[in-house]
Image (cartoon, rainbow, N blue to C red; front, side, top):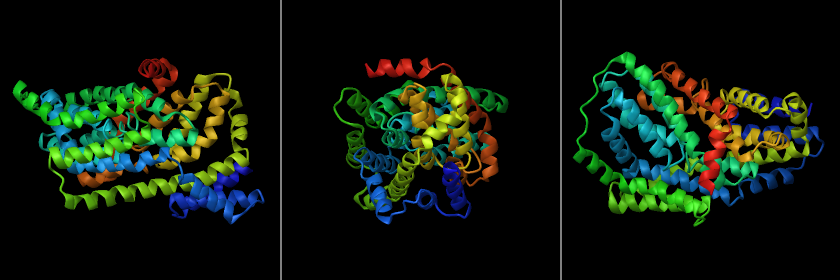
Amino acid sequence: MTVFIFLGSLLGAMALGIPIAYSLLVSGVALMWHLDMFDAQILAQNVINGADSFPLLAVPFFMLAGEIMNVGGLSSRIVKLALTLVGHKRGGLGFVAILAACMLAALSGSAVADTAALAALLLPMMVRAGHDKAKSGGLIASAGIIAPVIPPSIGFVIFGVAANVSISKLFLAGIVPGILMGASIAIAWYFVAKRENIQPPPKASFKEQLAALRESLWALGLPVIVIVGLKMGVFTPTEAAVVAAVYALLVSMLIYREMSVRQLYEVFVSAAKTTAVIMFLVAAAMVSAWLITVADIPSQMIQLLEPFMGNQTLLLIAIMLLVMAVGTAMDMTPTILILTPVLMPVVKQAGIDPVYFGVLFIINNAIGLITPPVGTVLNVVAGVGRMKMDEVTRGVLPFMAAQFIVMFLMVLFPSLVLVPARWLAN
């Protein structure tokens, strides 16, 4: 009955068109009434405490870093480097999108920001080269969702806070899975591009490649600083976010000189707006998370999943299917905030490594960003490319399938995640 009250009030509020953050508050109030413990002060306290977290300071700074990179020329230089390296291959522009997405993911950690930059820069080029617009848009969308997996990742920050798991360990564990996601869509794109039979552009000379590398060195320095700094214990993930934002700002204004002082206001406002949405979601979700614990919903979930508790692989498959279903109707951040407090006790009870689960969970949620009907990243590509949503959905299907295959391979073979994570951590 408690689970029904929680889900019924949440889904009912969302069905009425109430924003997700407010829907979470509605479900919290409904649970409070059901448990006969309604108190406005407790509600307000949990909202304030939900956003009062030092690790969550990483979110606004990573968002700011992403905005600065797009405006300050870091993103365009990464794309140019990828173009000189693999642009001459058959379907080269698609491989450029994938390579650039992996490099951009190591800079910002925001799927929406990375996808918007890639779609604006590469989609017109791919269409002019003769590639199908729907397939090109689908490829860029699926490449953009690598951002929440390769560090620095805003998704890992939110999950780490909600699940009380080391964010540094999550960052390091996400590197190889993120690369595997990129490799999977590269394989899918190879077969898609083979059918189109488009003549690739001429290969860039070694001099042009060297010039592009020289121009992008300052941009490529950022992920090196962040990852090495985290591994060596020089700074925490929150401090890494500050370093990323300050570094991007200095490079954009003093070295590349593509961002002026006048543009700073717009950049800060844009980052602040996105951050405000995320932080309010986190604050509202903490009310539900506290009540989920009080109502002992996790133990009910453990009883529900009892038939799978003896087999970690079957349990993970069941959980991944559940997250896939939720991901079709809900954005990444609320999914993390709603499901994490419910699923983590189940995961711990089954003896599954929380970092390993966190990587799978974030990959699944990232793929949810390109899963219709909601598909936030699909909407971004449709908006930037002036396409219909059903066109982008049709184009993304083979790449989405490839990424789901990789995710389930990681479920079946945990060593794909655990072995590289332990090697990087040591």
